[in-house]
Image 1 (cartoon, rainbow, N blue to C red):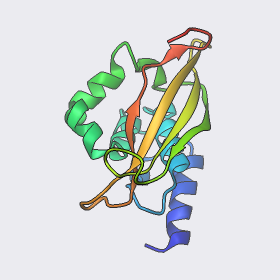
Image 2 (cartoon, rainbow, N blue to C red):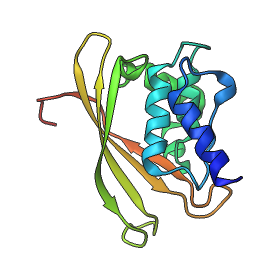
Image 3 (cartoon, rainbow, N blue to C red):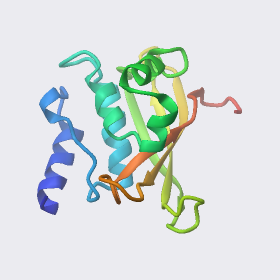
Image 4 (spheres, rainbow, N blue to C red):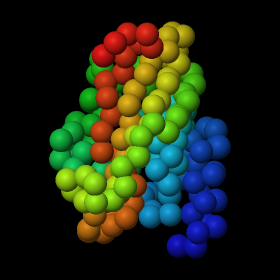
Length: 162
């Protein structure tokens, strides 16, 4: 796929409101780590605007294969996001994503590069939550060199130690 086309699709996915089911973005090596997190957070923010749980499905599309092994198939992943730990991410008011840490390829046990982001989320109740979001480059297979989410910390209120 051409770089400009991928960037256009990502731009439209990030700025479109409401998010449409037809706008499902799939992993591509040209999508940057920050864009992966932005796609997922924007989708969770607009989870139910066009179609129930579209945001959860979009987030699942960028779940790293090793993350999928831990969280189970999509229905189990959806239950986890709707559970007490993560439900406040669904249909939240606003979020900010900040780069936090970088580990280049070869310095991780898997040999894959990873990026960590600090994410602040304003819930519909007006609380501000903090999450640590980690994306990692896939090594091997059909998703080779795609950045995908490998882990997310449990959200906690800003100001609480964790």
